[in-house]
Image 1 (cartoon, helix red, strand yellow):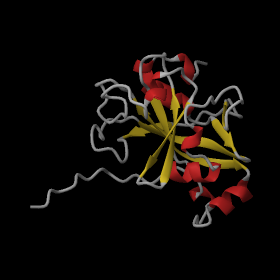
Image 2 (cartoon, rainbow, N blue to C red; image 1 turned 135 degrees about the vertical axis):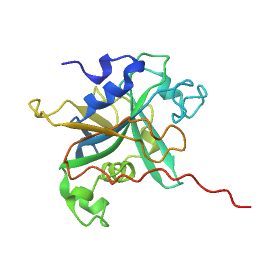
Image 3 (tube, rainbow, N blue to C red; image 1 turned 90 degrees about the horizontal axis):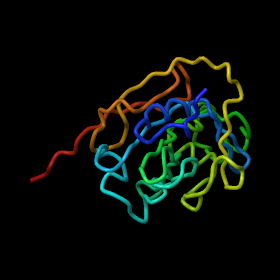
Image 4 (cartoon, rainbow, N blue to C red; image 1 turned 30 degrees about the horizontal axis):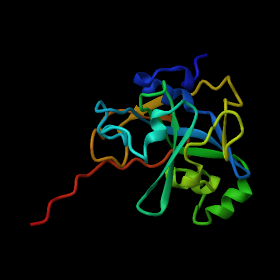
Length: 202
């Protein structure tokens, strides 16, 4: 089976789907990925951090596949992205939600506001909170175990889950591009909120 890191940047949507059911481990907690969002770059995807070219912030998106790209939103939440595709062409997959499959008690301590275990990592910021990761982890390797977080191939290769797709969340451009993918019926998938443009005042 082809893995996400074997695909070129132009096929970032396919890479995103292949990341579902992989597991991400960090700081004594492991999360099975149940929802992702794909982002390309260099003009073809105006919602991507890289669509205007390389900056100090997004440089990791242009680097080798299998590295972590972490950024902060609203000054408090962190989001994790897996870089994919060939070096020199920006592409990354946002990890939107997952199921805590190891370190459940630790995850509960890190997310005391969660009412149910299915809510622990049901969103990109929540996922990062249970894994206790922040921007210090950006541009670190995910596959060889040398970084603060490690990606593992699915523990159950026989998973034949149905994958659904739909609009992306929280972006002001190209939000209707159906590059958000999730495992159908999984209770840990985040709640979809359609993008609403802000009205100008005055």
